[in-house]
Image (cartoon, rainbow, N blue to C red):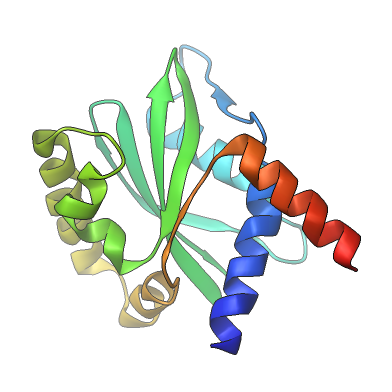
Length: 157
């Protein structure tokens, strides 16, 4: 339970930084590069690098595995008007098409992402998969809410 709250607080802190952040991709940048840039722009640190892989794309959605030191998880991203933004953070639950559909995507896209993630992760080392699985719950990213929770968290210290 302590790990859950630590992970939750870390995610809320990081999500607070999102507040309207999205990747402003250049025409030449690939979607995978843009997704990596969004995530690294938010969470990468010189002393604590963020690793983003694998990334699976389906239509205007992307699902990325991430690890950072002893933590990990998955992030669902959505592309609107050429810009990627994070929709939710989660763990193994983001491999379930029914869960993916709760974010607003259609069945075909959700199934394509779920199948793609399973295939892409087939070659990922077991230790990394355990980190992806370690993210408890599903945290919806709402910029205003994340900002308010971040501010409350900052004032609590």
